Image (cartoon, rainbow, N blue to C red; front, top):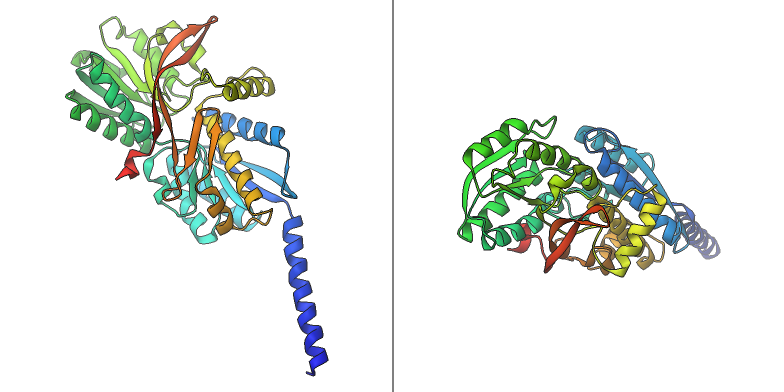
Length: 390
């Protein structure tokens, strides 16, 4: 090959490479959103998808010259299905980001695939502390149970609660809630009389609540996943436990904004700790709630919605930062360290843990304008996940 031919071949190779890069940037930027749209956690899927679509409606479907495509898949709350769908999205659809994940087992089943394919995985709902440790490509926009449970372990003994029984759903987040609440409660001088765990699937709370009534604690501390709180509240009131002098304290999953009005006045006065309330008084949240309800026939956004909304913000800003080029490692680097105002308050994506740092609020269920809300009365600022704080 003479010099002229070599120059021609080199030039053609460079042109082909430039063309392939240009084609990649012209291709749509695909987000594979895997959620439980049917089954026990369907309310989670409904809220997250609605919030993701609201973010796109407000901020457009083109970012840094790339058309954004949302591909929604229903995993029916079954981790094996989640894993299969994630594999199909990576291999067949060639998604740039995986997102969603309604429950911990779903997120954990997918984490190895994210690592192997170097695909950023934005966890918008699942809340077990260990999820971000399962893959270096996981970034979380939701919360962790230790974040919100420790706050209740501090508040309860300072407010007349000396003895408790805990009641949690028997899987990762429930185990986290039980562990971090009871350790902090005991460290503050409280007495844990019993620890009860309820099966995640088809739970029957009645026999557990009867046992609690027999043990007569000052309070019952509860964690159940989003969507199951109404059943706990109904049976708690039906058994007259409040009249027996047993207070209900919980993480905010129990007084889920999406279901709170259907729980009735029996929920009044229940104190919870959580990172988001639809009644959060910031101007940004008021706009978010108004827009969400308008777009979804009056449905009130809950903490799952804000996880979906902020997750989309994290993805959009990362794509902007890479000037539309994307790429797993570049997107991941751009997600780390983001600081922004969310409808829940100011948040940070910790660059080391890829977990969210956020305010945690003490809230009490009150009636405002004839409707039930979680009304904030105190705040713990910028809480890191205690599961990683060490």
